[in-house]
Image (cartoon, rainbow, N blue to C red; front, side, top):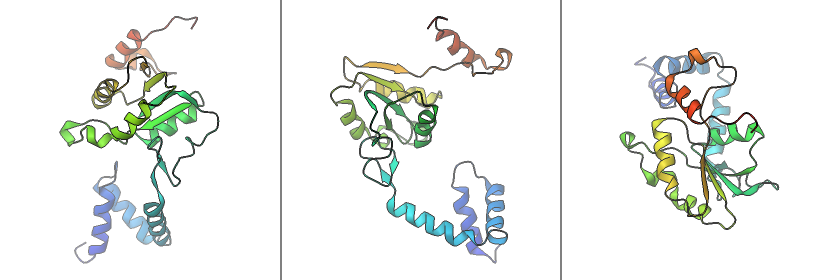
Length: 199
């Protein structure tokens, strides 16, 4: 591929995206240049438009084209609850359940000292402003059940003002799962977080 530097550049950029390795990048590149060539200018225009218009929501830090995202503009949100998530994808997953009607805050990551990601990357100024709002009664940490997610929740819990309930989403056996195939850590959490049958 030495004679097609633009193709190498495209592959190198694709490899920088999460979940795309060298072979996947090569396949995507070939597919775009051979079978779906008409998509290239459309993709370029869509990326340009997104780069120019997408910003952070002023209230929850979600991605939005307006000062407030669609979730924050919702008329029937319960402002007494604030759910803290790592990414816009996590917000969407919770929102899609239809179970939670409170507010959100999107950290846009988690603490990861090994990757050089410290507290300054988590938009703590915006989060602190949200935590100081009147009427807030509960902060729900819905960070991922990883070492980084747990550490992030523990660190941020210290920022929650006194008198506000702090909770963590439950972790445990997935619906439809079989106990013999569940890892010990997940099963242990499920036992620790068990609830009464009449709840």
